[in-house]
Length: 436
Image (cartoon, rainbow, N blue to C red):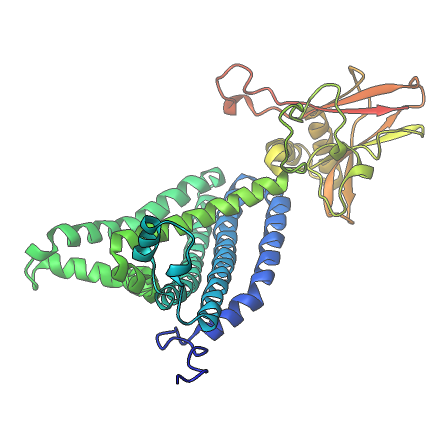
């Protein structure tokens, strides 16, 4: 008679870390989902508020950082799924240790023989699921760790490029210097790796080419760019085939980056997904439309608006407050140009602020029922939402009852920065209807 507990024991080749894997994945996967969502919302709020160079830098860091979080989250989720499948296999094997009863299949002899020939023993399936879960767990952590030094290098290179461009008096060249610096930094490693692969066997061990290539590769290896810098990826790729392993690693990392970008794009789509093919696509400047984002009373709690807005669709007082939030990626050039002009014209701080305000107000066109408004803006700040911008207090007591429309035309790009295409330099207006 066989021992009744024998079928309940795990296979001898079960990965010894399976309990710790389950503990780590199960305890952190839900926190990882929340962290990914929080970082995505933070990026969606912050990135539009940055000027060109800081926005580019923050976008790269966001892509790598949120990509690492996304990669870990998906890896842990897939690991839990595989471990659940593994547990199910172990359980069904303990209940029916003899396996399937092919003679009880209610099929014909040909199909029965086909099923019998294709059947894999449950012990083999258990071992495959166990190995797959462990590999997914290890790769998820190791690939996420790869993104950490990449983010550190990107940060260092950007800071060097920003300081160098600032010292040269050309801060607008920061992105170009950053790209050149990144290319020059990795070019020697690429050259040394290529020469070693194609000609390394032909060099004598004491020759100058062999010594130079060895010194170059040793330097980059110490900086964390060697093939052995990530042991889990190296073991995985060299056992399943390096080309196949690298393809899997690339697809996983690219998918994480793409997922990070898609999350950011979806977070900016306030209406979300759905079957709305027959409904006109809501867009800025769309006529005969009422956009809830244009009214403070209809905005989501905690939302940081990037477009002009009114208190509500219905105006009941003698004045109507129009707020145009300051969005650096949209208004940055106008504000900077007006600030430089103000600093060159007057020395007093209050006079400079007033002169800059007049300049900025002249660059943003506001019309009410097709007529330009006669008053200028005021500086606006809302500490409750950390919001800055311009405010127009529009007199509306004499307006007739019914529908009226405000149109806010953002500043156009400077003439020397406009694209040549017809109409491409014309900014789209915001249309905000309201009722008296």
